[in-house]
Length: 156
Image (cartoon, rainbow, N blue to C red; front, side, top):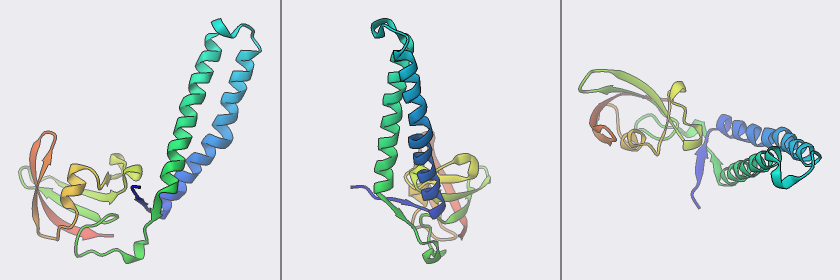
C-alpha cells in the first residue's frame, strides 16, 4: 500500500471534494437518470445513456478519492527541517544554464499545482531535489534533456 503524505490543508480540500461529489453531484446525476427514464424507451434514449455514463465516471472518482483518503498520512509541519530538502519544504533553485531562479514547494502528487508553485515530489525535479542541501548543484534528467540546478534556499 502506497502511503500518500499530505498537509492538513490538502487533506481538508480532499475531504471537501469527496463530500461535494457524494452530497451534491451524486443526487444530481440520480435525478438526471430518473428524468431520462421517465421519457420512455431506454434502448434509444441518449440522455439516459449519457447520465448512466456520467454516473459511472462519478462513482469511479469517488472511489479513487476514498482510496487516497484511506492511504493518507498528514504531515506534521512542526517537524520540518531546513538543512536538507524534504516534502513540504519551499526551495529556491537557480537554473545554472540560464540563471533563471524558481521557487517551489515540494508536495504530494494530489496537492501539486504548478500555478501555485507546488510540485510533486514524484516529478523528476522533485525527486532530484530531495535530500539535497543549500549550495548543492544537481543534474536532473527531465523529458527535454538534462538540467542543472543550484539549491539557493531551503525553507518552510
